Length: 257
View 1: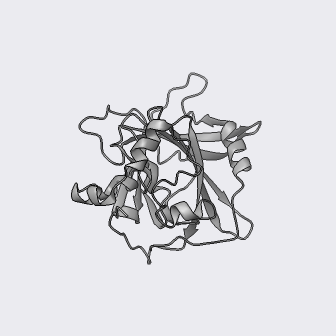
View 2: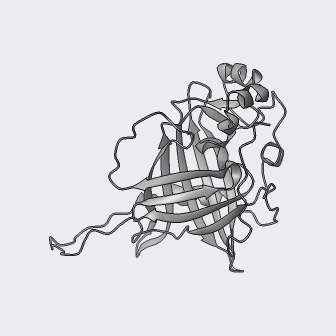
View 3: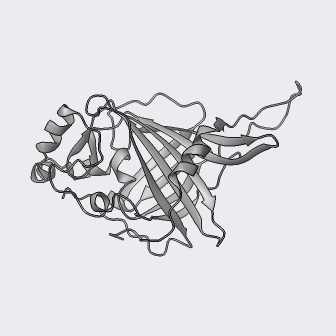
């Protein structure tokens, strides 16, 4: 699907941030010094929220920079520094196409802002797989003790994940997923050449909620830190609505324009 669904419901950003501020990592373990013969719980078995299924982006903010490729030199809302502006002003999509780098706008930073669907499933008990129609990309979120990433940086980088719970006096009430991604191949945070570097650090918080009519929503808060090209941390929110099934799943190739 090329375009995102438009809707009147919008998850309040303030409420989402408030939940994230009280988040604390989920901790599992034996109590009272008792030893258990059971195998340790997996990331899948102790999931704070169920993110599996197919979701569609609902674009209710930054519409003109997400539904279409902004014109060259349009950096509205992006806190890039002078070096970032210099790189962005030199954007040449034909050059990217000739170099086989049409996917520069579909890396971990940019792809979650693209219109379309995403499909979330468990690849194994410690790896959450996120497939996206946009650019036919796949992200892998690794839980637990992780192995150091090796090899060349890739578009989706290496993502370490942990469950977080909002704590009340009676115990966990709801949860979030925190994902930290590094070792990304340099790309664009917006398709019109707004850059991020190989040293960029992306932190994401996924918050799930069910509204009174039964619809399920996912709010993603993304924080990009990249002093090479950004004057400050860039924070954006993206919203997704769960759909009944994946019958309309239609991956599309990366486009440089």
